[in-house]
Length: 119
Image (cartoon, rainbow, N blue to C red):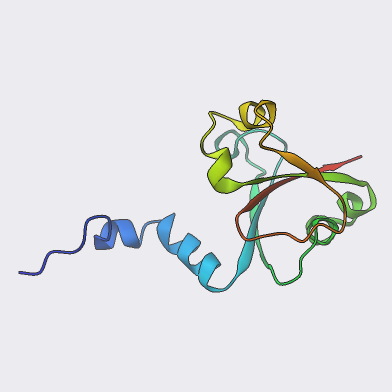
């Protein structure tokens, strides 16, 4: 019979991680997580949000998350996802100089991981 290509078995293709990410890319959406600053698996208040990426700025993302975050926006710390995944954690990536600071008008890209700093 016909064997599926490696990595494309129905169980993996329709998994809870692969299919949503494929849809996010296909529809050019921004996937944002909000929470109390701890890993999602340790938080009961972490939420996922989907927004159209088209022309979304750093402060625009802040506004979509919460008005207080928009008002108190200080800067966005930004790094490409693929670069972050090469490090054991966010702090290590930041120490290695892979995270850059951006202002309110920074136009988000589809592979950006953004940490919004606000007061």
